[in-house]
Length: 126
Image (tube, rainbow, N blue to C red; front, side, top):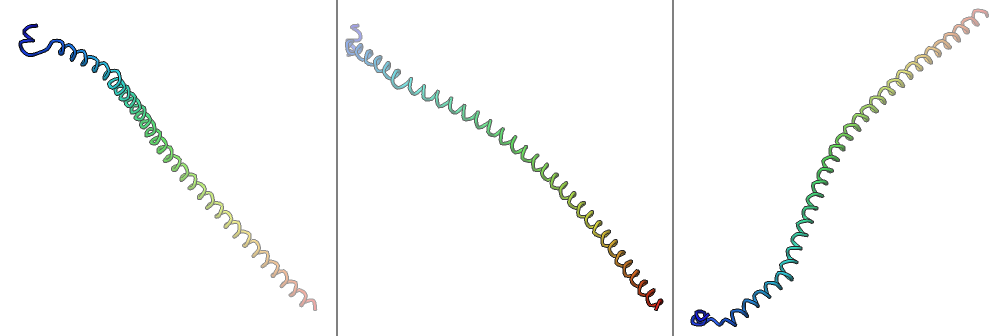
């Protein structure tokens, strides 16, 4: 202890500074360090949750995108089927119309021929 005194160090002052440093260290640990650590841990946890949510959303988006593509393909196929069906119906209607027109044409020709023959028969009788 005399050695410290001969070097110009006051023991009482050194002990008081060590005690003050210990108190300061305890206060900083309790009121600064622990709250900062808790905040960092909380932020890390929120970041992990956000990353998990982002991954889930990206997975859902890719799944939805694939489903949308499948639905579009199905819709295009259904549209093609409807168009083909409509074309077939139009052909049937066209053919039926032709048949009806042909039938009516024959009936009109037959009526004209029968009237002509009646007129010819009527002229012969006179």
